[in-house]
Image (cartoon, rainbow over all chains, first blue to last red; front, side):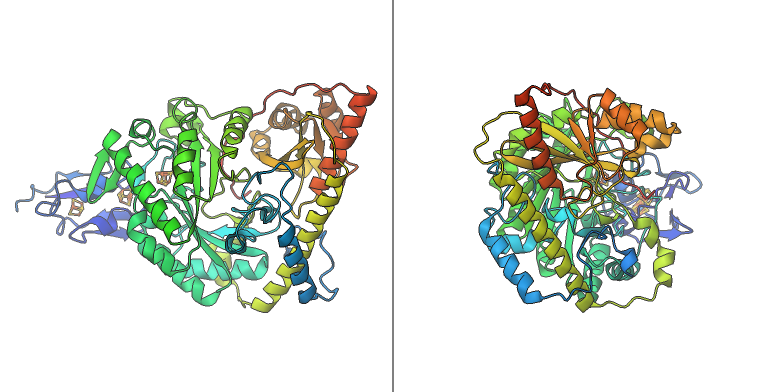
Length: 72
Length: 522
Ligand code: SF4
Ligand code: SF4
Ligand code: SF4
């Protein structure tokens, strides 16, 4: 399971990119995207998902229900 | 080339041999005599000259438009937008759009890589030889993007070593980077400090991101203020000049800013810049949407005045954008888009920049001399009459702008102690609302300078002149192309004479409005 970025809301500020412990976030065509294969929901690293914590726009980094929850 | 240079048409012709020795001599004399405004404390930045500043500090600020009120008429700055990320949220900022309060273009505007930024700096420096300062101010927080910010500094310090580097930050990450900042010889840092009390802070900052965690409310504000104070102390210990910016938010921190002023002064801040909150619903900020108003011109001035006894106050800040280019009060960034810059063939000519800047020094010296001579005519004057005068200028310290072309007016306070720059009023935004010229004048320009007794212009038409007179503002073109401060003093002297002879009656003027919006490229 993974987080995803709602691209219509992303300001492309890049704040989330360096905070991800799994380097799951990158820039694609002007907005930022999360690679679901790499995202671990920050489990085992931090108490809260870093992309959510740093993102200036509420509800932009959200759970992607297309994937099962990550199990550590 | 010469035709591209900013508003220096009034300067001595560039081909009358520049004698550097003579200029250095004049400069030395100038520094020795401390030409402070006459009212004791220099009003904004370093006021009219070195005043009571230590020589090593004067050396750092004298050509810096943001630190020296006098220099801001003559020298230009530029910002490069290399830092999009931020680590806090402020209620006066919506990260999607241009932030009017913190020199920040919206993140939708052009972002630069450090390499593009370095090229842009060279291009601008070659086109505008009086560009002496490069700042990184956003669009987010430079220290939330340390790699991009420091890479930019590294590239520029290699290719254009004469350009001063500065940065402005919210302070949260500052203590972690002070040594790197010192290592790049960054000698000016601006910290935005809006509070020193977490209860006040909680009303300004909904959250911060610190050490991999999002903090909210009082706790967030407490961490922020602790980090800001620590960062400020660390910088001043290392001899790096610090300017503190505060956004004045009526009802939230307006009275509290006097305490902020004391706190930052005791930690060695060099200059305090209190800026009006800029807030409108269309900005989409928390304050814009909840109807939080900004201060009026009088409220702002009286807070600045009450802090002035304490330390240097800056009143010439234009709250410019993170990608602004040019003299304060103008923005030439539209000339230097990434596309245009990348296509430019830039040659960095240090020698011609120096020669040009020494001409600027001559002009600046002449301005100071003229002011001093005029001030002598006020010697012994006891009157406590004070008036405000609006001036249309394109720079160089002269009355050299047409009334109809002015996008801002500089405001001077004239009193028995001389002429003092006290602020500026922006008027161009008012004219964008589709008003006819006549309406724009009546409803907007007059509102912006309603507290002034007179407006000095290089030229003005009959119609606007009549409208101004009807509003009780004297439109004056007899000082066209003269030095501003000298003219302000001369006008004041005549004004006093006219009161005494009974030709006019001195009355109080009303309040004025502060424009809403950051400087944007036209
Ligand atoms: S939740 Fe954590 S691991 Fe997943 S993308 Fe966000 S920062 Fe990276
Ligand atoms: S922090 Fe949020 S707004 Fe910024 S790039 Fe990441 S997802 Fe987009
Ligand atoms: S510090 Fe600047 S960029 Fe960051 S939220 Fe505040 S105003 Fe916006």
